[in-house]
Amino acid sequence: MKLDIKALALTFGILWGLGVFVMTWWILLTGGAGGPPMLLERVYLGYHITPVGSIIGLIWAFVDGAVCGALVAWLYNKLAP
Image (cartoon, rainbow, N blue to C red; front, side):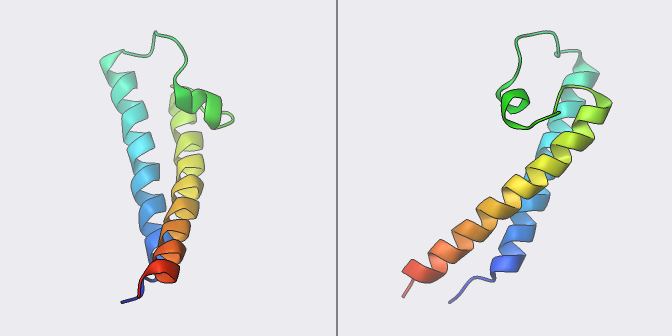
């Protein structure tokens, strides 16, 4: 069985993007944004724990997740019998 690269890339992108978006808003609503910078703030340019940062993080995470999903599907298709 072969995996559809586009479908897995889209799925990974949506899940990772929404995960970062929801995590950012969870931190904003619970007031936990007053610590040292998060790793994502160092990796995703322009991302901060702010409402605008949640949109920037959503976009970066979607691209990141889509690339990873495409790589996973491609690698699976190459290695699976």
